[in-house]
Every structure is written in structure tokens, then in C-alpha cells.
Image (cartoon, rainbow, N blue to C red; front, side, top):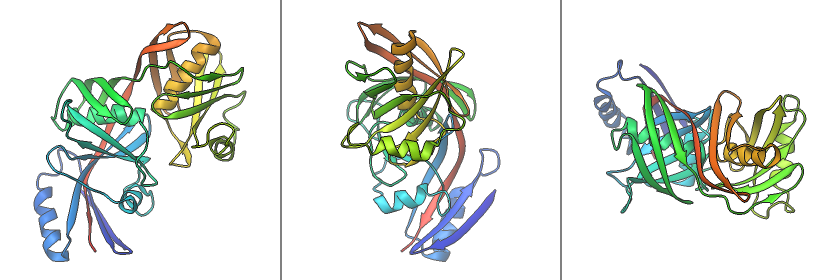
Length: 302
């Protein structure tokens, strides 16, 4: 077990990173820290990633957890916090297995996150909330997921996405909402592309969207679809984006054909399948790995 603690403003942050075999008494340790440092709140969390798109996962199925925008921002910060592209809260649902609430790393609650949607299904399995076949609600509607445990920390998740009935298609671009708005741009070179500046240019272009979009750069290399994504709310490139992978697969289908498409992200291959009917897309499924990285406790004081 390793420990790292430091002060930032009014917050004291202490992380306990551990695996299932090395830590058996973390709750006792947390209680001791509480007594010695007059800490007034602690949050248990897990870190997951889907194809490198990483998230802080919090189980609030049995308790109400309210986090300020400032606190979420600090938790997600990679220098002064845990570090993540976003934070996800698993909370109770009246009619389904649970409800997903997603926050970007800027602290603001956001639209649906596809890789986060796969990770929360794996997290629910990992937390023994529900195992293999999952139905949950999110900001864009109801999702179903099938979780296969590959190893104690590795999962494969198939996640239903929303039907796609409308979009704006050009010869080299696609504007589409796959749960989050995306602008897919066809390019000839990904390796040397200035993702940050070019992505920001499209992200804030009012001619594309008044509210801003996520931007996916797509390269067809010898019949294989490669993408890189600039994410709104992260304001940077992420290693993968599930709604962006879905948008890119639909763009590839419209430009090149196909209804079962592998998308090559920075470190993994994700798959998108669908039924294509008169240029609409139904029964859309996003599939790929979801990985449990570590568990910990985030502790802060006034």
C-alpha cells in the first residue's frame, strides 16, 4: 500500500491505493486519520478506464453524495487530485438497476459518456450491485449492458446506444448526436495533426454548434478506421471517447459502408455494430474493454 498526502487550499487529500490482496483494513485506517486530523468527510472511490478514457467511480446506491463543481474539478485534476477525464456517480433509480450521473473534469455535469457508460456497468458488476445483464438510466435515456468478467480487474462490456435518426453529412464531415454532440472530420494524417488547436477550432465554431461539440478526426488507413478525439469539457485530447467512437463508426458506414465496424483508438480497439435502415441506425451497440485500475479513499477537510 502507498500513501500520498498534501494540502491544497482548504483541502487535505489522502489517497490509499491498493488491490484486493494487499489491503484488508482500509476503513480502520480511514477512521484513525479522521480522529487525528479532524477530517469531516471521506469518499470511497474506484478508478476505471475504458480504452484509456479514465474515470473516478463513486457508489452512491445506498447513500446520497453531493459534490460541488469545485471539488469534482480538484478530484479530477492530474496534478493536485486523483486524476481522471471525468467523475461518475452510481445512484439509485426508481425503475431500473441504477442511474448514471456523469461530470466532466471541469466539474460540470455533462451529456452521456459512452466509455463511462461501459465503465459504470463494469463498476456495478465489480461492486456486486448487479452482475451480467444491466439496465440503467442516464441523461440521454435508458441503456442496457452485458458485462463479461475476463479477470478480477478486466471486463468486456457491450452497451446499447441511442438510435440515430438524424445527422448532417458532408463529403468530409459529419455532425451527429450519439448521446453527446460530435463533429467527425475526415483527415489524411493523424500522427502529425495538431489535435489540441485544430480540435479547439472546431469545438468553438458557432457555425458548427452554438453549444460546442466534441471533435473526432478520422483516418481510413488501408480499410482500418483510426480516430483521435478532442473532448468538450476536458478541453484536451483523450485516449478514447465512446460516443466519439460511435459517431466515427456511423461516419465510416456512411462514407465507406459496413454495419459492424472496428475503431482504432490510441491504445485499444472498440467495436460498433448496428442495423442500418434507410440511412438511420438502430440497435447500436458499443463494445470493448473496461478496466478496474485501483480503489481508494479521498479525504478532505475545511
